[in-house]
Length: 271
Image (cartoon, rainbow, N blue to C red; front, side, top):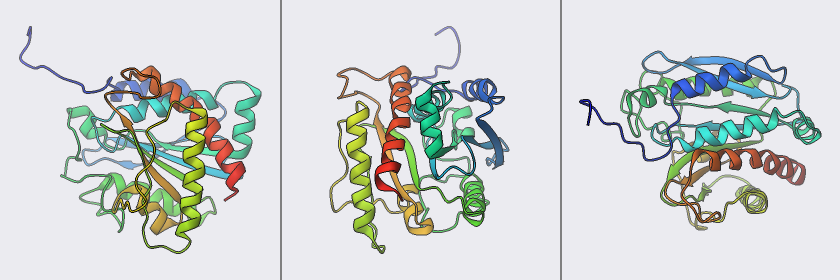
């Protein structure tokens, strides 16, 4: 080692500088609005990227990087946004049906400092979504809740939410809390899974019929806000559908294809 410190990345890195460069590249696009919503525990700014019109018929919300080491979600988001900003008829069609809202890097402090899971006050930002966030312990989640409350107040509740993560399995986590119309939610998530299989390299499948994912954003958004939501893991070791180890470009391609998945989901389900 030529120096005193060695940094090891489990997946292809996506740094705060990469995000800032990406935000700068899209900030002036007429389809994009970037809105600050709050700050992390250490004072780093959090932003929501909106792609499309605020009055689109439907809304899709995506959150990435609640756990700092799980950089795959940032690559997915980048591919998704870039696809929607292409100047072609298909992108116009997609954005005629939905607007995309993205919180691209939730745990910026952890990313900056090379942490793995928690924010700088010891909170897992993908837990405790069954109750309002403590603004002192989880200011990142509190900021998102305030933004969501305003969206709902102004009649712009998202119709689908996806929480992006990395793990060693790569499954779609569909929680089954005891809520009214849970069967309708499960039917919609089945449609979503089938569209993933149709338009992406997703093959890993979803969780068992008895699965509960209590406290995660996927279940919390369903229970608290009435939003169909799931946690989407991406296998950090292997892409079964491609039979190769993952790189950022593979997750970017996946994100690009999510634009089609969202469109067909919303036109089929009509939430």
